[in-house]
Image (tube, rainbow, N blue to C red; front, side):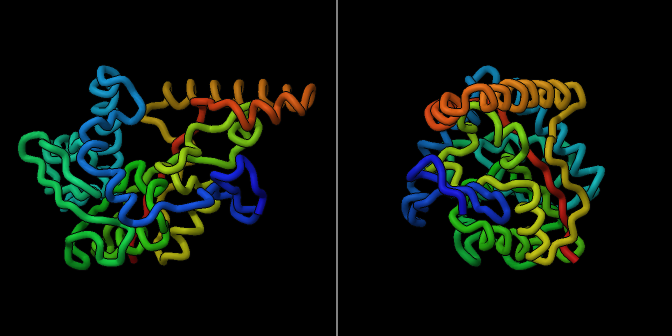
Length: 271
């Protein structure tokens, strides 16, 4: 294993996953993601941008759900403020949410239960209850991704679909950029997956992968803009600096943080 950014994270030399060197306890995770965290959550955006951007992202995700899985009963795990649930309900999904803790209030009609992906049977639902399970930007936060995935599978019906997105590491942009990716962020982001390692996680869990995009965006224009930005900053500028002045590149790699980075999307069917 290649150790870097001591002592917080390391990168697996086999699959490329970046993981925190020290994981929080279950009690620490539960406390961290309690009501205070949920009440102020805006995914790193200012509140105005969050209120404008997130409905557009959720609409694109709901369109993907309809395309890949149709419609049916839906569980959104790590549902945060409940806005995705609200939009899914408005689109005729029978939807319910689950999270570590509960906000002080949710949009009208949204139902959220308290539960955990860090424990077997940690979700308060019976086996094979849902046609669709969604898990948006959550698995990077859990202590044990294998346990979390098995719990998502447990509540999914045979023939049902799991939709999951999570930050990407290990592409050329992330490896060459002259800064540290903001995705590598303990104690929140404990595991950041490469495309290879996420596929292995799903395949080893017995799921049938039906869709996997390393660079997912809500429309083609945004996808192109993000790719051009990440390639130019990460590969061209970062790679160029590494060739010209490797010492400066290493110093920036350990001391600076960059906002560039991609989100990968995976959809799998439970056989």
